[in-house]
Amino acid sequence: MPLKLFLEALTKDLESDLAKTRAIYRWLTIQPIRTIKKTNSEVDKNTAEMIDVPCVVISGFTKGSAYQVGEKLTKKHRAEWNAVLINEIWCLVDTFWGACEIVEKSTTELKYSYDDYYFLTDPEQFIYTHFPDVSQWQLLDKSISMIQCRKQACLKQRFFELGMKSLADTLCCLETKDGDVSLVFGLNRHRSKQQTFQCYVKAFEPDKKHNTNDMEKTNDDSSSNVSDTSTVPFPVVKVKVKLNEENETTLSTKIRFQEAGKHKVEIVGKERQVKNADNEFDWIAIFNVHVKKINWNKRAKEALQKELV
Image (cartoon, rainbow, N blue to C red; front, side):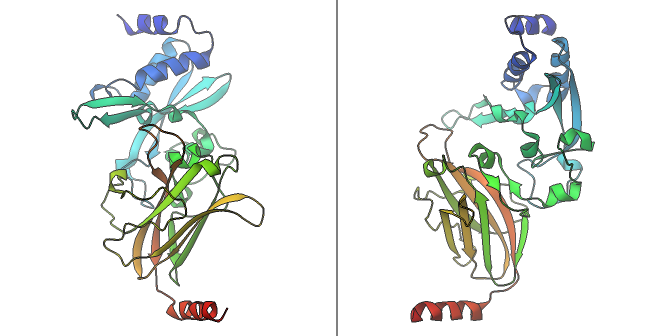
């Protein structure tokens, strides 16, 4: 069947441009993406135009699985995605990122799964992973530069899915001159009791890709000290959900390193009550931390003060 006729059949009972566009997105994201000769963005544009929905291809850079936190965006990070006009508002879509590849463990068969997150993604969230060549396609009230995009905190999809928010302009690459690091994020007070978080600290390996399979099995306790420290001295890690001075519910992560050098800090989270295969721990944020030195005198004084109390 010609593609145009197929799309007409797919969308014939749908009245709004939103419903038609979602149907096309759902169809595209279950296609075998590695066998498509054109880019997903080109296919998305062509199919959208066949049902009279304005659509453009946006060229730029993306921070995918091969991206190392804080590195420069170069040719290897080039990508394309789309903006579609829905109810006179331009909205962002990435069908390539929305088409998840899953390897079935029992058969090693490659399957494709649909991810709704990259359909009409909030521009304030999209900019953490997608940087367009033309700033107007950031669709932000105030656009940011490429340097700002590279330096901003590496916040992941799960961060936004859990309703979290940044409370400060945290950078992705941090430095400490005393060995202590504190990271604080806002939580949705109505959802935080049903969420659990953990933190992993690793030696910095610049050529290693992110992989959630590297995470160790740990107790499901948001206040537990969790670290993958096979190559670094055991740091003290405290992850707590608490109220700050403004009475906001926050996730507080405090790390006390035991050795100078470069480290990677990975914070993960999930919904506590959701019982399905997709509800595994996934990244909330990833940071590179350069520990310039350890202030042992400060720690000795703190220990002495605790003994005197």
